[in-house]
Length: 224
Image (cartoon, rainbow, N blue to C red; front, side):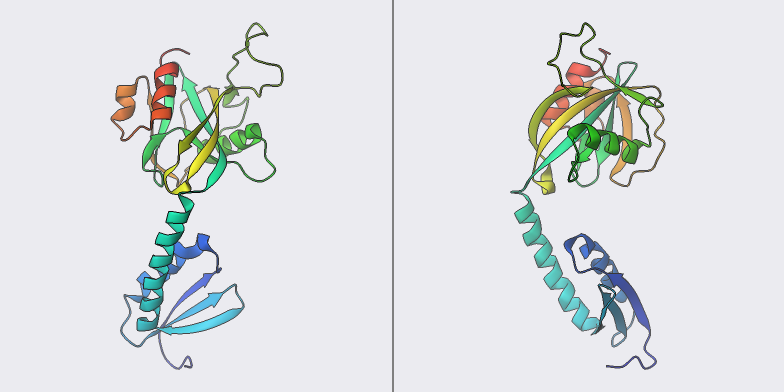
């Protein structure tokens, strides 16, 4: 089929799984056009394919089935992660996470080559816009020098494993930081809202609080 005078919806995509949402978005745009119009779809910026509305609708249905299978497979995956509990005047920062659909601290999965501490610093910068020393300090548990083993990363509190919903099981390193203010300096698309809480009741007012997060809030809130 040639271009002719047909109206087109154009999407520049990679073939990988992370871009499935973009493919779905291009299909949604197509639904606004009339039957018989075409979409111009570039794959890896090299191959070009033409689809009628019906053809792309069929592709979209197959994609939905693939997404369901992929999500089911992801439920069995394991990944190292970090969570960071920010404290300010006895209050703990929690966020309403979109993908996990739960009330959790900031954090995320460790990237290749990172130590847990490096991952924690990166997540803090990405999700809060905070820099160490300017906006926060890692909490010091060893005020007398003998409370934690030598070599323990600053602010590290414990290792735990938990269900991260569609991300599978997170093998998680938890850190605590002392915030110098309550201002979030960047916009993070991973969560819908944030709140500084001083007890578990206030945390639960936001939504579902996983058991591991509940434990941290009960231990940390109002104590530092």
